[in-house]
Length: 119
Image (cartoon, rainbow, N blue to C red; front, side, top):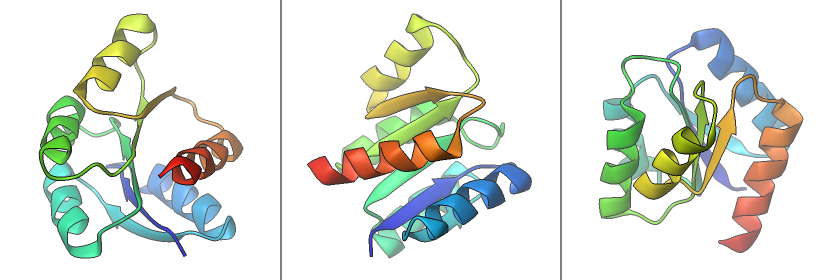
């Protein structure tokens, strides 16, 4: 069963993502900030990371760069920024996909499955 690490500072949002991913058959590990996320990455060895920029506790750009120094795990960033420049910034920092809020949970699960098929 693939393990997904969800990093999101918003408890309600994190719970919704966890529920949708578990219902789709994934094991889910959570973190509320970047430091916890990096710790979980090392301890749990997830197959994919979902990172939301909903919390000031998560510096999304820095986190992506740090992960890329130690792992090639796929990263999906969920952000509030719209437009091409925001998407390009995250993709250049090491994200494999960028999704704009609000995110459809069905689309998120499909994106997770798509990335996992390629890795």
